[in-house]
Image 1 (spheres, each protein chain N blue to C red):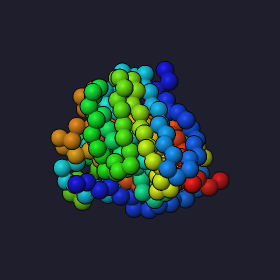
Image 2 (tube, each protein chain N blue to C red):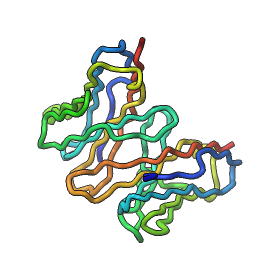
Image 3 (cartoon, one colour):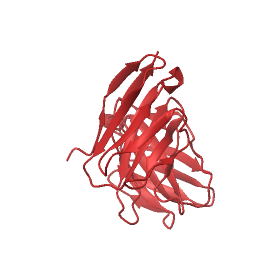
Image 4 (cartoon, chains in turn blue, cyan):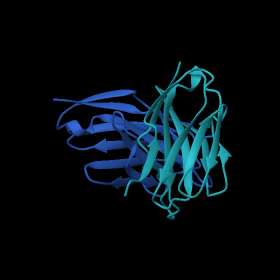
Length: 113
Length: 114
């Protein structure tokens, strides 16, 4: 099976600093990864995705890095803002599993003024 | 475009009571999912429906049943609620665009069983 875990349950950063949230997955057959953001009282929202044939993908203020050798991915948020405070999840899909994602437990990001 | 709509948003049940959580999506998605979210445990799949007319068990199906009523609607039923089913329940759906497998989530139902 697949397990996905985040390295830290909580992370605090100063406003304006960069944030890095790390995630590890267990199944080398995972071929697709997503980062979600969940604000308090809301459902998870898509941030960025990356396929296993890529090492890096950039979005607006966010970058996802994938290291397949050590089965690790990270989400980098540039110039962290108060609105970035939320729980961040990574999710992985195994090759051939249609559209079933396995989710990590989440990292609570707190942005300090 | 409402996306994924879940009802109710909050519910308190007594042990042994039954209820149905409703989910509807207006994005013409084929696949729909029910997850539960508990502190420190992430999202765990209860049931999913890959397409209209099909349903399959996920990681934690015991105590639940589902119905894929039509392409838009996917309901989750608790026949005899237990305190262990206290959780936040999320419905999600996804489309079939090749290369993209992300889900759109509803805003959740917070269920307390006393």
